[in-house]
Amino acid sequence: MSKEFGYSVAIRTLGTAGEKYEKLLHSIKEQTISPEKIVVVLPEGFAPPAPVLGCEEFIFSAKGMVPQRLAALDKIDSAYTLFCDDDVELIPEFMERLADALVNHGYSAAAGPLLSFFPPKSIVPFVGSVVGEASVMVHGRRDSYVHILGTGGFSYNRSIDLDSHKIYKTESVAGTCFCANTAAMKAVSMYDEMWLEKNGFAAWEDRVMLSKLIVNGYRACVVSDAKYEHNDGKTSVKKLKLEPIFARGFNHYVYWHRFLYSTAKTGGRRAWLRFCKSYYKVMFKLYYSLRVLAKQSQKEEKKAWIKGWNAGADYVETKEYKAIPPAIIK
Image (cartoon, rainbow, N blue to C red; front, side, top):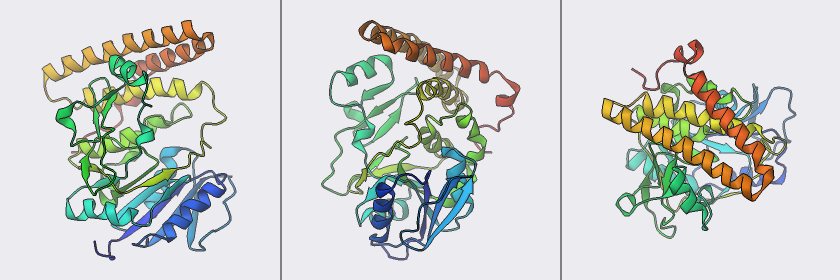
């Protein structure tokens, strides 16, 4: 891959990740292909961290996963943008390996594998499969990393060959770190997806970003040997309690309606999706009921999720939602 591959880095942060943030910047400095620009976005009123490399450009935006990411995108004119949270650490060849998929194989978005993004190896995968939340991928899709289910959940391939350079098509990645064609990201207008921020936590933001690209004809992949560490600062959720659970229910429903149901091309497909949605709601409520029996403290979580889901169903009937441009850009 040519060292002339042009990209900039967009980092969203609260400025409190400390050593984890410094590790990220040092790993960017060690890349075999250097970035053209590093844009660090903080919420307005937050103090920027001390410069580590000396070339960072600090900008400010409204607080939130989506507005901070978009504020960085507005400042970038490189061919590609590497979107990072402030707590990841890249191997030196990370961008070189993603660049191969983006330039030589025609993908518009690429990421490294993050197997911790998947459910742990336990009874959890069985439960997730029954509910329709997250299931182990069937053999026929083993050339894929993640496939979106009719419930809005996903199936996943844990058997990624990490020891060789393989490219797996995908319909979602962890939003912690991925690279995308800058023009494509601007063309699909993530400004239309600000509903993600309505409840104080942008649950499903990463799934929405990839789905917005895919329904508009772009392709995404995961490159098996583009490895990175997620040091997991959790700075955005450590003070939250039930808000993320409410937001997951709300954003799940809106995602299902906007990116699956509303983009379905046939009546048969829409009927199937309605069945999947109803099945998911029933099974997820049952799942939470069983958790409540096992641990009484889960009762408030169940209430928060149901309220969020129902609020999402109400929201898609509002004038505000119906005024949002369709997910598929004409």
